[in-house]
Length: 276
Image: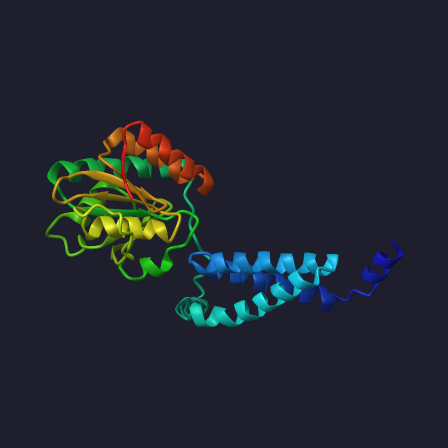
């Protein structure tokens, strides 16, 4: 107790300001990278740092040496691997826009599901190709920025207007964050999985590809057959009707990653068909 009292007795106003400034800087950094894949690397570095501290405390020299080297090379690699993301973050600092992010409540998300399903059903009937991506925990800003900004509330008419064949935005994907369409005509990474069925085209490969690199959900409507599919974790469930899609969205959108993986096999047994 005496040591603790001594520490606090040495505190000055400038020390409090110093701590608050560091706290603000760290929290701001997290906010800046939360919508990018870089946040996953930061989490990894945090775990390595935690392992390093534990190994140092326990006197585990070999593990401590390994963690020390990992941290050193990891910190050097960050600006090299994520130079594009860092540039965009610095641009946002200049605009002062990285502190603001809207979030939707459960009622708004449920309404979003209804609008998506309504639009998907109509596009399926008319064989209008579509690709809709729902962002979850992993930020997809780098893909959102490849498209045309929309930033509008999700609605069935808006989705239909985007994907109609004569629309200049019908090629590419619609990116949804919370209950808002952030951008349309976005470019996505294509899956290189050799086991994907040969009849599936670019739209389906992009649908699978984005879920291989993030925890997002993607809905795809085939332009040739009108078939509705949903991709998650690199797996594609095909031949979905409106009710099946609604139930899947309700379960997978809120599910943790490990739970979401366990839901998919259940759906396959219930009639959803998968193509990996």
